[in-house]
Amino acid sequence: MSPLMLDRLCLALLDTIAMVGISAAIALVVGTPLAVFLVLSAPGGLVHAPRLYRVLAAMINGFRATPFIVLLVALLPLTRLITGTTIGILAAVVPLSISATPFFARIAEVSLREVDAGLIEAAQAIGCRRRHIVRHVLLPEALPGIVGGFTITVVSMIGASAMAGAVGAGGLGDMAIRYGYQRFDTTVMAAVIAVLIALVCLVQFAGDRVVHRLRSR
Image 1: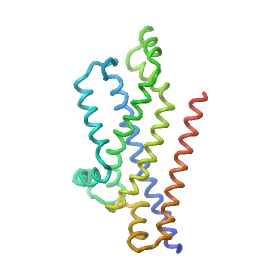
Image 2 (image 1 turned 60 degrees about the horizontal axis):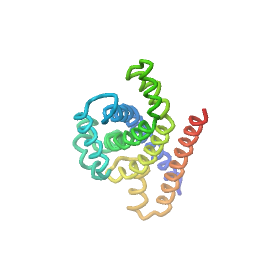
Image 3 (image 1 turned 90 degrees about the vertical axis):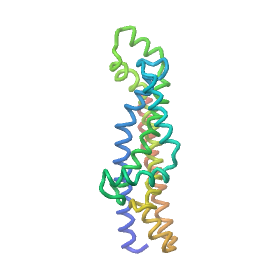
Image 4 (image 1 turned 120 degrees about the horizontal axis):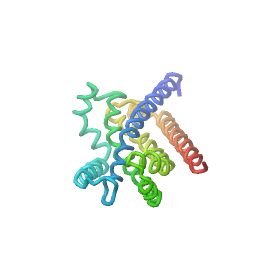
């Protein structure tokens, strides 16, 4: 690869990290409360809100069932409304966040449901309020599973960010399409694939290490 292509590859990598990082942060901040509410408001939960639970669960299932490329195109008007454009890093953050949030919320919900019911009953027996149960029982006990689920979410978002390059979102996907596929440059395509694999392996390794430390405490 030429020095110019190497520079473009480094810039594309930084763009991908920025897209995924911002979107992952949004998914974490929004998805965690969604997961907590789904657990609390489910039948037999600590909050009696069956109608709201059904509506929220249906919405989450709807977004999860929609392929990312379809969601990406369908959200173009909303993306333009929020960011003022449909291309670039900020434009990619909107569909990435909306796609990743319900995905992560469901994974985190599974981890929260696996918390021993006896711990919750014990907390209720000593007079703990719902917010205390969530803060001191549910979240700490489910934290390793939530971190593991967040790692899976970030890995899937890296693949989705590459797909977003098809509509000019920038990053490694955009470089692979523009300089690899359209110009029939297999060297550029192979380099982008190698960087994506390395990035996924790094994220997975870091996530596994954090989960291992949390479980060994």
